[in-house]
Length: 120
Length: 111
Image (cartoon, rainbow over all chains, first blue to last red; front, side, top):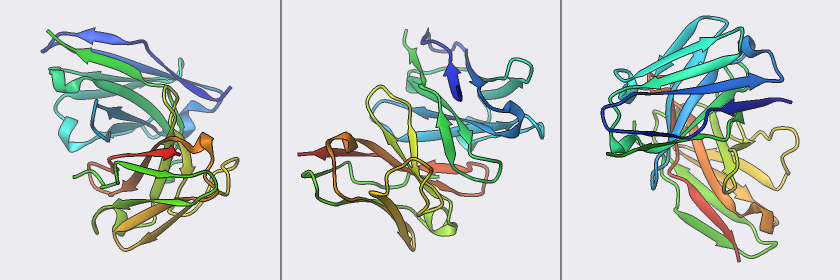
């Protein structure tokens, strides 16, 4: 089955870090870019970054470059995103998504999301 | 990079057509044809319904259609059905470091 399975909900205190995972199945992991998007309460969706397992490249949005680390593990077909220095404003649902094919610029497969709550 | 502007809500009766606008700038919506639309039902994963302004993925109803004029993209849902009640988001490719920008989201209600 073609799917992205994300890790479970997280509760963190301000200043802490969190590491999300996104496991791909049903397709050739290295062929596709994987992106991260978040949805904060009352806000729109926000693109955070991407990884390209085949090419070994990655990138993140300007607002997150200092706090986000993107990695992947090809044998387990899993992409990770670590976010540091958490604040309550990071409370959101975090999604991973597959880009159709490199260069397609649309996301044709999404995970169901991981809820992060940041609270003291 | 600012979020693209969508109406907060749009409603219509079954069978009617509705249109959701997505307004950006010459740096995103107006920059290229990489505008896509996503549907999200409560508690479910987002679903791609339109890509490259007006193309539909296999399996998506032809009641969904997209268009673009200048810096504004639009999604039209024709023959509105109860199952179309969901949140809809547009997305544009910017080509810069912050590569993608999303719309603010529109909740569609079927009266």
